[in-house]
Length: 374
Image (cartoon, rainbow, N blue to C red; front, side):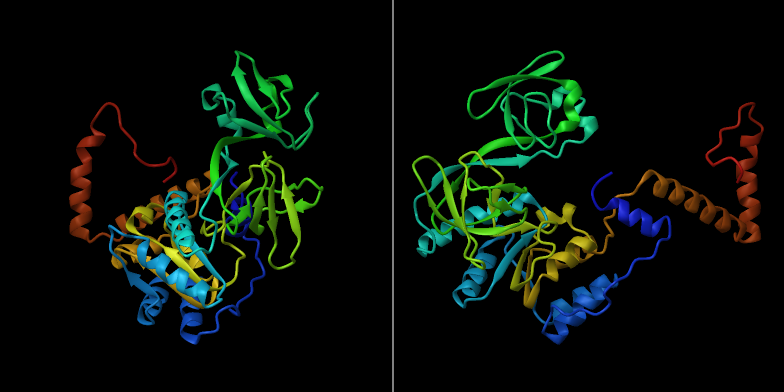
């Protein structure tokens, strides 16, 4: 079961009530607050129209989906505002990060020279996917969440080769181990790549861990790059606490902190939020995503799209994944609704329906397209 679904199912299926904060405190602008109240209650059209009326939703050139957003974001940080860019998809976020970092270099807000750093991207393989050997490739990194013989919890091992019943793994010191496929529950799977980092870059921690001095690093923590030494050690600073951390060369669990997904932005609060929502992101757009993205700011939300009407349509979709129990319930509900409709047919239509269906009952084999008992 995907994270978050269990609580939702307990609430919607089991009927367990939850305590909710019914008053919105984050937004200062009254019209902005009113729009968030509409969205939080599922009144998407009313919330969308309120945001549009106060010019929070902006039409953009589809050929340059990030240009205006980046210019507005730069203006915001130059006014010393805390700001965050949000997009529903990693793909769009990566495009924004690349374009924004180039702009920051031109403005001398980060160093113009990049140094390479290791980046590990969680493939989020399910247990079922891990059982299929075809989902593994040489070069992937396994990070262990439990101890196994000769492998410590938290350690990283790269897949060197794949055999019929086991992996051959190698760690950062060159040690090798054989791991049977039966241990698939003991690790998470990551794709290894490189990312460019410059002095002044804003990065985010993407998995709990520790720095070289055994100080804890928390998932979602935002940090600023201070330096990268010749051995690849990344020195970063928390600009709120002023704490300094030294990340190991192969730490890997980092990403740019300029643009994050709507899911990752949960819990963040800034002065202004900039939301990239072009048509290429609509497949990842729904009511919850739109509300989470738009509600991150205290002062103002900037929403950039090339199709306002379509954005409203997609943002009106609930977007919940459904459990097997929910799918079964929905199927029975649809059948019940159809039965009620048939009973309420006008007499002439009822007669016509019977006449149309009657020949089917004369067949030796009757095909049923309904659940037994109805």
